[in-house]
Amino acid sequence: MTQAAVRAHTNIALIKYWGKRDEALFLPTNSSLSLTLEKLYTDTLVRFDDSLSQDHFILNGQPQAEKETQKISRFLDRFRKEAGITTFAHVESINHVPTAAGLASSASAFAALAGAANIASGLNLDLKTLSTYARQGSGSATRSIYGGFVEWNKGTSSDDSCAIPVDDADWDIGMLVVAVNRSEKKISSRVGMKQTIETSPYYPSWVETAETDIQAIKEAIKERNFERMGEIAEHSAMKMHASMLAAQPPIIYFEPASMKAIQIAHQLRDQGIPCYVTMDAGPNVKVLCRLSQAEQIKNAFKEHFSEEQLMITGPGQGIRQLTNEEYRANNWSLN
Image 1: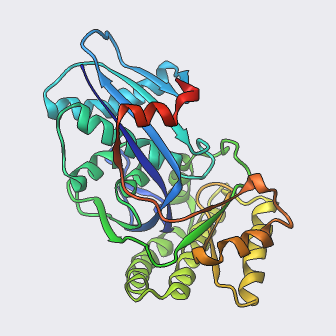
Image 2: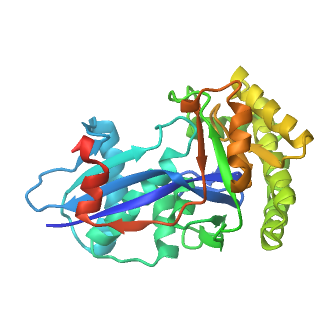
């Protein structure tokens, strides 16, 4: 019996991933770039146990149904095959992120699962290779292997579609997460991507400009030009949502409160406080800002949002192994 526990932080894409050119291997249509976040993360324990007759999956303290467990089993099979083992596994995962609410819970979930399975199986893959495994659970999990700013190079095949660390983001970078709605979204990312690719006339242009955007934002990060980086990130998000709005039928993740959050950020910019919005497949808004100004920005949002809806976070680190004591201590209420 071997086990390992790993923590992975979620990430928010600044240059978005939206669409697959290969659905089986999770190969994206364009490269993307993200910021890993400190406050949102998943802790996962994987135990390969010879006494088990099937895989078991417990999420947030609740045993999961066969459908969800099979998804985890298929993911673990990649590690079992490579390691030459057939042992079933007990998997516990605790999401310190609302699941399926557009806050990238799948990114931290599958990065943590990949990290724990990597150690528990004895494979001990390097991080670059591990990111290609994580990608096959959730595309955005590729980027959660590393901390700070991370690029997901679309690559030419499954072997080189992987994460590349860009910058550790230790230069006054922060984000205000505005949780407009923590409920599970009605249209999943998988369904939304497919529908956009198949029906939106704007989608090809979005993919084409994404390649230019990623080079531009990497240059802005290298120069530590916060304003330029924010402008590129906000434009990327709006272009992605424009392609969704042009799908048939249209895919609309915006809610009235989403628009209010965007309006507040724009008003703050007009007042000379640089902050820029981004949104994934969900109504929640993330405001990219200088960490030193995050409290000031949060106070402006408090006029329309509750304290519980607002969270300031700095950059997060890459995956790391937890001791058994760390894992149990942090997730004591679910054990």
